[in-house]
Image (cartoon, rainbow, N blue to C red; front, side):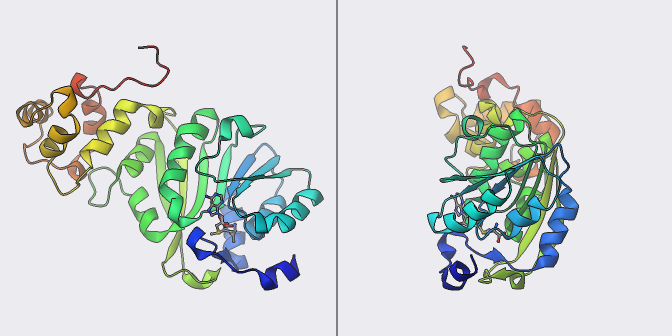
Length: 282
Ligand SMILES: C[S@@+](CC[C@H](N)C(=O)[O-])C[C@H]1O[C@@H](n2cnc3c(N)ncnc32)[C@H](O)[C@@H]1O
């Protein structure tokens, strides 16, 4: 591994900024505190710095998903030394977690490849939260962390952040400077902690996802304009949009970023916005 490490050429196009600050690894382990009951998923184990740290805790099993085969030798050695660790190979966004993992993870603890943060988070919410996962501690770009932790009604809020808020909580627990990584990323990073407490299948609800996606299509435009475009196939005109807004105590000029979580839940009940769920038999 040491020899590999010396000659390894990091591919920063796929987020290969490896953690070198031991203090940050220790912080992640202390904060996430895996117990003997925890099955942990790590995305992008890389050179294994966090993987080895996680294996120093009493966790029951550790599954990791890595895309870069050049890292296979080092990761195979780690797995060979500790039977609790299994590495899967492939693209973590396309990965079929439910079928491939022997057991659903209770926790996801990872230093994510930043360029795929949003699709990965949706994959976790769609596949793993309904199965078991109720805790995530993720290293992401600071800007993404701020968006995810922004509650509905806040300028920076987003469909992903609002969905996380509806399912539990998201908190930035530590900001991390570029010097914690090799090579250093051009952006600041943050550890975001997500706790799932309710609405575990919400991310699979097509009506909810469709409403948020269509409402935020052009975030500086009014909801009436976005709905008239996004729901034109369902017959939602600007006039009908004004009626829906008025019925919910909202101004005709309301924009997606102004709505509270209660309003989103109420709007998701409006028949005009209803989309059938896959496999619902409806
Ligand atoms: C930020 S590095 C983290 C490496 C290591 N865990 C650490 O903390 O230093 C991100 C890792 O994700 C891997 N990666 C990038 N894209 C991926 C993808 N689509 N699926 C799985 N792993 C990916 C990279 O190869 C890299 O090892």
